[in-house]
Image 1 (tube, rainbow, N blue to C red):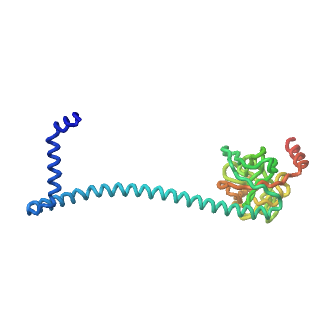
Image 2 (cartoon, rainbow, N blue to C red):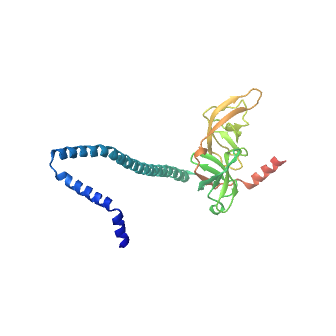
Length: 276
């Protein structure tokens, strides 16, 4: 208590001044003196002038906060729209896969691509199906758009597939229109080629290319792509035939493993001949 009284004693002049100012302000609106009225008018005008920039600052801060809130809401809505669009596209893909699976002449195991190799010359994909699902080595990998490749490694729950865009990939193929045979192979740069086709044989742009009955891995008739270009190179006995694949490998997500196994005896004999 003594300390409080000491503080009042030291600052009593300021306390009295503050009280007098407060009383004056309180009585200010009640005075009808013309001079006081004019002073009151100037005071109100001054306060109005000061209020405008203060209100602008307040409104600016409020607008920034509102813009930030709207921006976050917009990002959230955009993300929801993307998820809905992605779900819709996935639903369309799955419907096509189901329809294709129902029409396929062989049993198909649906699989999802869960990994890809980083080697640009020997591209592979990792699938979320394995021996527990009936998958074996050399089984074809396809989509409703055509041939993807073949299984080369199998574990219990996963498998690795070699795709068309792999330097080690080979597949016996033929032109559907003229039954001209060749070998599908990737050259490592420009794209897929149908090799070993003589200059005299009939192959044109737009021709459909499918797997042939001479393949050791694939059943005949699997769609591979279309001929996109045919060139005659001087000095060579064969045509340079480029193939545009039916599968878009840049957007490969869902595939099928075809439960098809080639004749093991035939495969062993031909591999023995190739090694001699």
